[in-house]
Length: 122
Image (tube, rainbow, N blue to C red; front, side, top):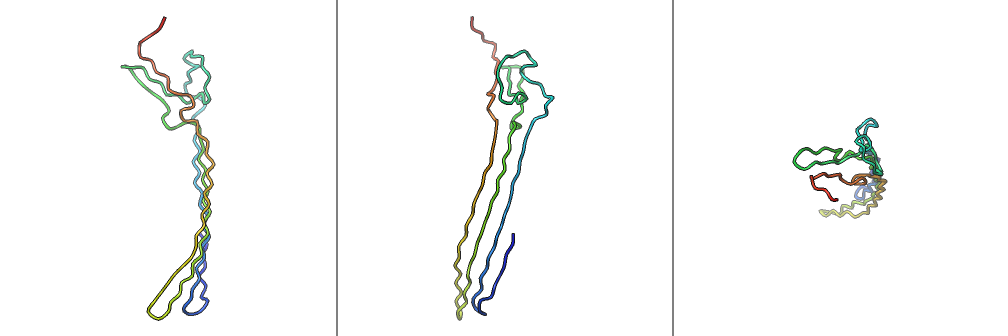
């Protein structure tokens, strides 16, 4: 944040602020993880190493929220206000502008969930 207070007169003060914040969260799974192809399953997967698999009454495993993704968010903020003191009174008015930029990519649920429950069809 960068800010400045400027005294226009002893009873009028201008305050200006400029702020920038960035959140970056990039996720990827290790390339040597087990895949469905390793188990002989012939199915297309957007993210081969992201698996959610369950066998009813036996076990379940998966990558949870670890799918390949990136969440990059930038926030730009500008504000300016004027503070006026007159006798026993004080008034402040101003404006603020925010711009939020969200660059996101997420393969969560792109592969679906593979479930086995013991039933079969002929």
